[in-house]
Length: 425
Ligand code: ADP
Ligand code: CA
Ligand code: CA
Ligand code: CA
Image (cartoon, rainbow, N blue to C red; front, top):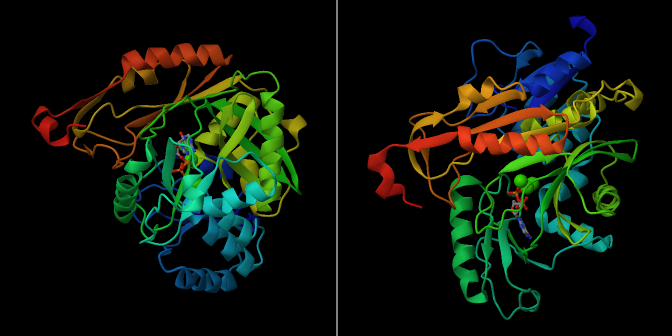
């Protein structure tokens, strides 16, 4: 019943990505939506949304005050986000309002790649050698001890980055200063306030993502999925297929490392999306995000592969309720996948072809188109987003792989010819 339904503040979720709203319905939770400033809301909002509350997170103190006064009128039961840059604000707001949360300190460490690396290293986890470049002017001094110790290639990236924005591989020390300048330029344009960088050794192995759910300090790894083996210099997302085939012993090692990461950051509760690369059968974590990953895609992956209702459980935990017991889970399809349609070039899009045929395939669950005819894709290292996601379920991962090869053939992005020279990659 609407009157005694718990209310959760959901910060900066795009309503075009529906899974978390559907999950709120399943969990019987009403959503107070804090919309993204860059999304025009449609006339009809998802059914779970009971209220729209505008907050300007670029002024966190004012945003918190606004939340506090609304909370005094009618108390919320929880606050959550799937948007990585908002994780620290949400944790601070939860602390300030006395709502369940992971704590501001854990949230800051999960959102700052320097703190995360330092905490992982202190906990004895596998960590690539790294150096921090703090502040807008820190020049990479190749003779500084932490930098001379790095073996090239290295990766330069913003400490507070997301979506691989400004992440670049650098092969030789003499190229480092120019790369740092280029990353700073991307940050100025795309990640306001991001001035701190990390330089770390490049891990040359296959990439995996882990969906997990923690409750009262116990971490349950739901799925480990294959993320391809992008080699750079820029790191576009490509595929996600779960469960991943893994070398023997690797799954157990990954589960241990993910649990160790939770302990190192102090995260006892809620969902996490962890990315890692394997060196042999040894996992090296790239980062842990204290949220349902991929704006909700991670829910589809975990649900398709295991039957676990990750998104609904994340919301339940955020309002102080128990997650669903594992024995109550629905039978799963077996495998789930996300295909990220590659830009395949740059310029003004004339057409994104093949999506209708893909929608009609029986394995296809969702096609989410994000770029449309008329939109401009700028060449890397700039980032304009991806044309579309295709989310699917399969009896096993081999079937997902065959389906992805079919999508390679069916989908293409066509650009206006006159722009070709201007945007040549
Ligand atoms: P973001 O927060 O922008 O997602 P990540 O650290 O996850 O930043 O980096 C984005 C992608 O860049 C990773 O998914 C991975 O493919 C690649 N990458 C980042 N760091 C490394 C590294 N040290 N070695 C190899 N690849 C890396
Ligand atoms: Ca990442
Ligand atoms: Ca991140
Ligand atoms: Ca990624």
